[in-house]
Length: 307
Ligand code: NAP
Figure 1: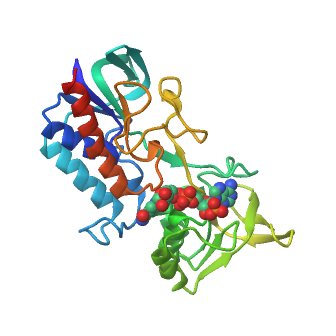
Figure 2 (figure 1 turned 45 degrees about the vertical axis):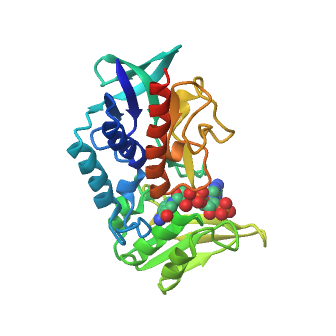
């Protein structure tokens, strides 16, 4: 019987694992694949993590991981398939690809993060991996010297546009409104690149191409006009979807699927906690995910010691 099983090894899960070891918990981290790491690993540059300006997301993720390993946090690679709640004890069910595994625990911390949202337009599915991508830092290098488009107006879209502007001949940023929601500092950085062109008030209606992306059909929402923009690739950065599908029967979620939990990461189900991007919160940043990890362990400590 573990004190705590942490599901997920992004910034929230790793931070929680460090605090759990310090609290003396018998803890285990389950991760989908070795070094799952979360979204941070695909972030080109993190410029708002205190004390480490400009660090790459990969290096920051590795630092978190190393810290957890130095604290002798045990990790196991297993895909969680569900949680059984038996009043007091929980059983986390998982598979390592060959056989089912069961882990008994007094508490569970869900730190499974969030994944990219889809555009759901014709051509998106068919051309994924053939010019359609959801990760500029992973796939941007394929478009060196070429034209790329980014869809979205948040931090990720603008970060992607900056990253691509450094290596592509031309970058279009396509946004459905006339102002961006990305942080002003990111916008300022992007507008310094003369090869970035923002196409305002426009949505993608179709991603076109035979075997590879060749063009995007756009519709201007204000003028009700259409245009076709030629591009070699399109990076879709239209927000996040919480990785909570597996847990929706056991914990309450909001309409968008985020697990309902406050700052102390306590869900409406006793003994189950949620930290990081998967829970309801107003600001999803690495620093707030890391803070969740600490707050969750404090709440779990209180729960385990009040029994
Ligand atoms: P986001 O902030 O939710 O932005 C999503 C963008 O996509 C919005 O501009 C939205 O338009 C647009 N969009 C949504 N659905 C669309 C659709 N169907 N068609 C066209 N456009 C659509 O998501 P994100 O940029 O992925 O960021 C996710 C979270 O991570 C945010 O909380 C962000 O602050 C955080 N983050 C922080 C950093 C950092 O601090 N360095 C870096 C990356 C991410 P509207 O603006 O019109 O809604």
